[in-house]
Length: 166
Image (cartoon, rainbow, N blue to C red; front, side, top):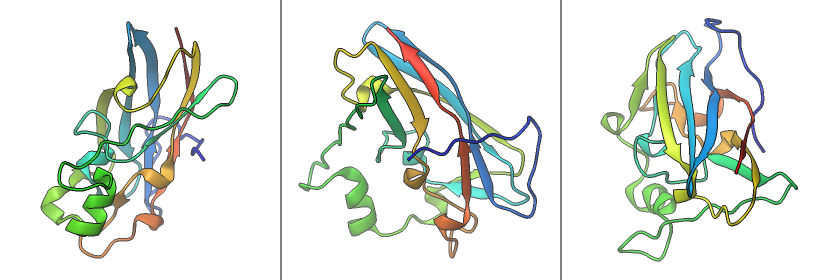
């Protein structure tokens, strides 16, 4: 399920690990569904994110977004197959490669904002739907506070819903 909450601009929570992921715009451009947003570290320490979980930085490796048609029908994520395996890219990363090395992660410093843009039509089977509700699926965002020993479950993800219409 999506995380839905937000902090006021500039709010920090130094005693907690908080990554805010505001969805800013969602609009159709022909067959493309362009969504823009950001990652904002609201914590008092650095957070580390695997690039495959940052929209627009690399190919999405998991269904970071929760997308439904306006009638509530979930839109399926289109998993890409790894060329040397019959499993999805995300599963190959976790099962065959193991956890990411610290150099594989993007560092987001306290208060830092990383903006992104992604075409969701590349990753989700949108079909002929006319209206969509988009949010972040927080359980699919890989973020840690310590690249060597951190736990992804200690970081709170805050986000919002956004709508797109054809």
